[in-house]
Amino acid sequence: MEKTPPGGGRLVANLMYFARTLRAAGLPVAPGTLLTAVEAVRAIGLGDRRDFYWALHAVFVNRRDQREIFDQAFHIFWRNPQILEKALAMILPQTRVDTGAEPIEMLRRLAEAMNQSASSAPPPQEQLELDAALTFSAREILQKTDFEQMSNAELAAAKTAIAKLRLPLMNVRTRRFTPDPRGPRVDMRATLRAGLRNGAGTIWLKRRRPKTLQPPLVILCDISGSMSRYSRVFLHFMHAVTNDRDRVHTFLFGTRLTNVTRYLRYKDIDVALDRVTEAVEDWSGGTRIGECLAEFNRLWSRRVLGQGALVLFISDGLDRAAGAGLEPVMERLHKSCRRLIWLNPLLRWDGFEPKSLGMKAILPHVDEFRPVHNLDSLEDLTRALTRPAFRRLEAAAQWRKEA
Image (tube, rainbow, N blue to C red):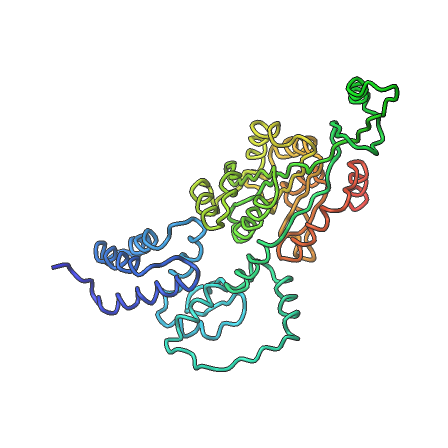
């Protein structure tokens, strides 16, 4: 007969309660997962809190982006058994709960999950009257809400809106030509061929015009710990863009560079994110921007930055190497593309100033510096890409004037 830990009945109930909380917070917890968790706890016992933590971690966490929610849920749930009763009063995106020790910051989605778990009785059936006049206001609030402060429902609505976004780019002129009856240039070769075929005394001039096409789009996204809450949302944006247009190349970087272009081409967003999670090994870790960009310049720039490529550089600019070696690689990246746009979520703060060494090394080598922290900022980006960009000299003069 298997040995049951002390308080086994109460422990099993708490494990079920904990699994229900994780499932409400977005983790895929099946009934069989709970049984596996019970067996794991029976196998290791309750002698060491760290063993208990990693046993549940091994059972409930199967993707890197689930670690943060699990970690906060574990430390809050198993530190104070009455924490769920206090979670009923949570109305802010981040709440501090006084447990007699150091205050704990909660994610809003985790707070909502605990709030749902605490209500054991089903809510009474009520007739809801929806006022259509409030629909626009709710949508406007969602547009301006920071991704970091969104609840589960708001985040799901934001991902749905992101999936419908389209990223129109202005066509760029190439050196090739295409036939056009009203083109500005005469195609002498085509004209002579047509004259030889017709054999008539009159030769009709064939004309041509410069060929235009959509430029390649290259996305370099930071997935370090300071960017983890935003990068998960940006992956949905990258997936929507990759499936909407051709010649999109996506790279994720933290301490190393990973090309995830082929994984984001899956039509199913869940399959695409699973493949990306399996491929990326440095999720929510440190940041080595200089080394990763140097690797990109060395291995990938000649392959993907041709024909007037546009580069979206998504990062907060916080580098663990304090910007060492970052300026020359940014300069080379800037010279290799037609337009380099830096998207930084830290620009959401009114008094933001680029004071870190990494930011100071990056800033002189970008054409545009834009915020990216909510739906409004993403829509502003799509509108900006339809407008002609400043010439490089004009952009540099604008930077010097603002500095």
